[in-house]
Image (cartoon, rainbow, N blue to C red; front, side, top):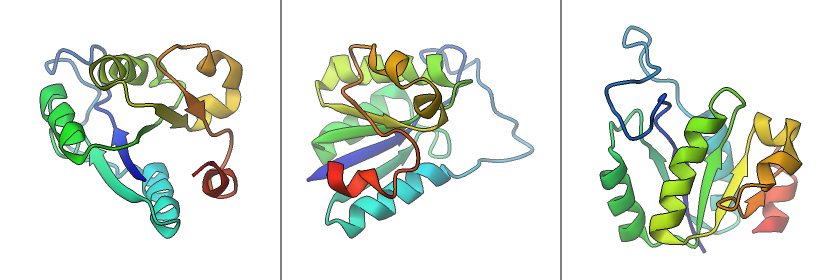
Amino acid sequence: MKVSLIFTSIEVNPHNKAVAFRDERLGFVPPLSLLLVAAIMEKEGVEVDLIDMEAENLSYTETLERIKSFAPDLLGFTITTWSFHSVLSWINKFKADTAIPVLVGGEHVRLYPHETMSYDAIDYCIIGEAELPLPDFI
Protein backbone atom coordinates (compact mmCIF):
# COMPACT_ATOMS: atom_id res chain seq x y z
CA MET A 1 0.00 0.00 0.00
CA LYS A 2 1.15 3.55 -0.77
CA VAL A 3 -0.11 6.67 0.99
CA SER A 4 0.49 10.37 0.35
CA LEU A 5 0.14 12.40 3.55
CA ILE A 6 -0.45 16.03 2.65
CA PHE A 7 0.02 19.06 4.88
CA THR A 8 -1.77 21.69 2.86
CA SER A 9 -0.91 25.32 2.50
CA ILE A 10 -3.13 27.10 5.04
CA GLU A 11 -4.62 29.95 3.08
CA VAL A 12 -7.81 31.95 2.99
CA ASN A 13 -8.19 30.92 -0.64
CA PRO A 14 -6.18 27.81 -1.56
CA HIS A 15 -6.16 28.89 -5.19
CA ASN A 16 -4.53 32.27 -4.48
CA LYS A 17 -0.94 32.14 -3.20
CA ALA A 18 -1.02 35.90 -2.47
CA VAL A 19 -3.21 35.44 0.62
CA ALA A 20 -1.71 33.16 3.26
CA PHE A 21 -1.61 32.63 7.02
CA ARG A 22 2.14 32.52 7.47
CA ASP A 23 4.54 34.50 9.61
CA GLU A 24 7.89 34.53 7.81
CA ARG A 25 9.66 35.44 11.07
CA LEU A 26 8.58 32.21 12.73
CA GLY A 27 9.38 29.84 9.89
CA PHE A 28 7.47 26.63 9.43
CA VAL A 29 6.17 24.26 12.06
CA PRO A 30 6.59 20.64 11.02
CA PRO A 31 3.31 18.72 10.71
CA LEU A 32 3.93 16.59 13.81
CA SER A 33 0.63 14.73 13.60
CA LEU A 34 1.35 13.65 10.02
CA LEU A 35 4.91 12.69 10.97
CA LEU A 36 3.46 10.41 13.67
CA VAL A 37 0.97 8.93 11.19
CA ALA A 38 3.80 8.38 8.68
CA ALA A 39 5.86 6.54 11.31
CA ILE A 40 2.91 4.31 12.23
CA MET A 41 2.20 3.52 8.58
CA GLU A 42 5.84 2.80 7.76
CA LYS A 43 6.02 0.44 10.75
CA GLU A 44 3.06 -1.41 9.19
CA GLY A 45 4.91 -1.69 5.85
CA VAL A 46 3.17 1.17 4.06
CA GLU A 47 5.18 3.27 1.61
CA VAL A 48 4.59 6.91 2.59
CA ASP A 49 5.22 10.20 0.79
CA LEU A 50 4.85 13.13 3.21
CA ILE A 51 4.13 16.32 1.30
CA ASP A 52 4.41 19.61 3.20
CA MET A 53 3.04 22.14 0.72
CA GLU A 54 3.91 25.08 2.99
CA ALA A 55 7.53 24.19 3.78
CA GLU A 56 8.24 22.97 0.25
CA ASN A 57 6.44 25.99 -1.25
CA LEU A 58 4.48 23.73 -3.59
CA SER A 59 1.66 24.95 -5.79
CA TYR A 60 -1.44 22.89 -6.35
CA THR A 61 -0.13 21.76 -9.75
CA GLU A 62 3.26 20.74 -8.33
CA THR A 63 1.59 18.81 -5.52
CA LEU A 64 -0.80 17.11 -7.92
CA GLU A 65 2.12 16.05 -10.14
CA ARG A 66 3.92 14.62 -7.13
CA ILE A 67 0.82 12.69 -6.08
CA LYS A 68 0.31 11.29 -9.58
CA SER A 69 3.99 10.34 -9.83
CA PHE A 70 3.88 8.48 -6.49
CA ALA A 71 0.53 6.83 -7.39
CA PRO A 72 -0.79 6.35 -3.84
CA ASP A 73 -3.75 4.20 -2.85
CA LEU A 74 -4.85 6.77 -0.26
CA LEU A 75 -4.49 10.50 0.47
CA GLY A 76 -4.26 11.56 4.12
CA PHE A 77 -4.85 14.99 5.67
CA THR A 78 -4.90 16.46 9.16
CA ILE A 79 -7.65 18.94 10.01
CA THR A 80 -7.99 21.46 12.81
CA THR A 81 -11.21 23.41 13.19
CA TRP A 82 -9.61 26.73 12.26
CA SER A 83 -8.12 25.20 9.08
CA PHE A 84 -11.13 23.07 8.14
CA HIS A 85 -12.52 25.11 5.24
CA SER A 86 -9.10 25.70 3.72
CA VAL A 87 -8.09 22.02 3.97
CA LEU A 88 -11.50 20.94 2.66
CA SER A 89 -10.99 23.14 -0.41
CA TRP A 90 -7.71 21.36 -1.10
CA ILE A 91 -9.28 17.94 -0.47
CA ASN A 92 -12.11 18.70 -2.91
CA LYS A 93 -9.63 19.66 -5.64
CA PHE A 94 -7.34 16.66 -5.09
CA LYS A 95 -10.29 14.29 -4.98
CA ALA A 96 -11.78 15.74 -8.18
CA ASP A 97 -8.47 15.46 -10.02
CA THR A 98 -7.35 12.04 -8.75
CA ALA A 99 -10.39 10.09 -7.44
CA ILE A 100 -8.05 8.66 -4.78
CA PRO A 101 -9.79 7.82 -1.47
CA VAL A 102 -9.25 10.39 1.30
CA LEU A 103 -8.53 9.72 4.99
CA VAL A 104 -8.66 12.59 7.50
CA GLY A 105 -7.81 12.94 11.16
CA GLY A 106 -7.07 15.65 13.67
CA GLU A 107 -8.82 17.71 16.29
CA HIS A 108 -11.68 18.79 14.05
CA VAL A 109 -12.48 15.17 13.26
CA ARG A 110 -12.39 14.29 16.97
CA LEU A 111 -14.81 17.11 17.79
CA TYR A 112 -17.09 16.84 14.75
CA PRO A 113 -16.84 13.31 13.30
CA HIS A 114 -20.34 13.15 11.78
CA GLU A 115 -20.13 16.61 10.28
CA THR A 116 -16.68 15.85 8.85
CA MET A 117 -17.88 12.64 7.22
CA SER A 118 -20.85 14.45 5.66
CA TYR A 119 -18.57 15.84 2.92
CA ASP A 120 -18.49 13.73 -0.24
CA ALA A 121 -14.75 14.14 -0.81
CA ILE A 122 -13.90 12.55 2.56
CA ASP A 123 -14.03 8.75 2.54
CA TYR A 124 -12.56 7.76 5.92
CA CYS A 125 -11.70 9.37 9.24
CA ILE A 126 -9.68 8.43 12.28
CA ILE A 127 -11.28 9.78 15.45
CA GLY A 128 -8.89 10.59 18.28
CA GLU A 129 -5.26 9.53 18.51
CA ALA A 130 -4.11 7.53 15.49
CA GLU A 131 -1.76 5.12 17.29
CA LEU A 132 -4.42 2.54 18.13
CA PRO A 133 -6.95 2.53 15.26
CA LEU A 134 -4.59 3.27 12.35
CA PRO A 135 -2.81 -0.12 12.18
CA ASP A 136 -6.19 -1.88 12.07
CA PHE A 137 -7.40 0.51 9.36
CA ILE A 138 -4.37 -0.22 7.20
